[in-house]
Amino acid sequence: RTVRRLGRRDEARAAFERALELRPADAAVRYSYGLLLMEIGDFAPAEATFAELVAAQPGASELHRQLARARVKLGRTEAALASLREAVAIEPKALDAWLDLIGVSADRADRAGAEAAFEAAVAANPDEPRLLRAWVMALKRLGRPTDAEAFLRERLPGLDAAAWAHFELALLVQDADAALGHLRRAAALEPANLDYRVALSWHLQASRTADEGARVEESYAIVRAALDRGEAFGAGHAQAAVEALQRVCAFDDVDRLGDFRALGRLWASAGLHAA
Image 1 (cartoon, rainbow, N blue to C red):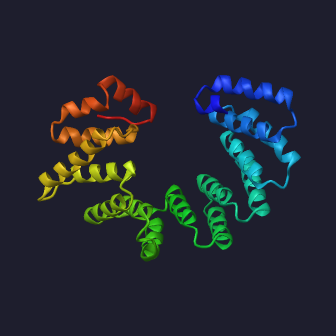
Image 2 (cartoon, helix red, strand yellow):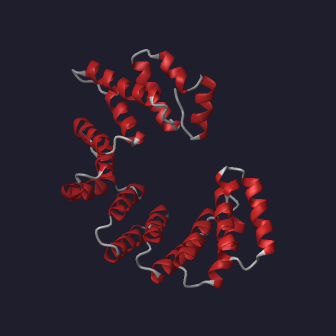
Image 3 (cartoon, helix red, strand yellow):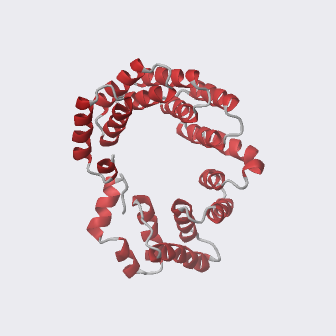
């Protein structure tokens, strides 16, 4: 497991396989081996591994969920849904299984199935904010952004201290100033969240208002502070940051994110494109 944590996946796989030769009945080792297979993208043997574990421990909800995850990756959606339904039938409080069930149903454009799963999950796990966010994301994936916005607006009085709710609303509302207000609130509630701060920076630099200059400077200050703290910029963060930095001709700071080739590769790896 130490080797796995260090990212030496080939060595970790060999170590797990050797351990299973020595202790074939060790369920904990087999479970960790299945997780490693999922991590490295070897989904067929991962499915076989979790199927063996489910056969040996049919009452273990989490094993059914892990089997479903492997099946989703293999495109076996119906089988995955069956495994997830089994997981929540065994343990109605299995929140991660409910989240997966909602998400997989939404991904296959099954509005009725996703909604039924959400309602059953809320009944079993009342007042669980992760379910509310999962339903918002499901509605967006189902192509129902207006419904997602209405759902959040209705519940915002009880979610005013939830940064994610303001962030999602900012992405959904049509009014630019309202979006800016929600992004400011999200960033204030969770100042360590780089997603929220970068989104705020991008929105500010994209403004074309009377106070555009001040907004562009604020946008730059947000990115510059993150760079000075040495925060790790992902592909989306870097793309938005470059726009903010170029607005003020801070080309030296752009170089701190990487050279043209490095940034291009980063964006290409994430399916992002820059003009």
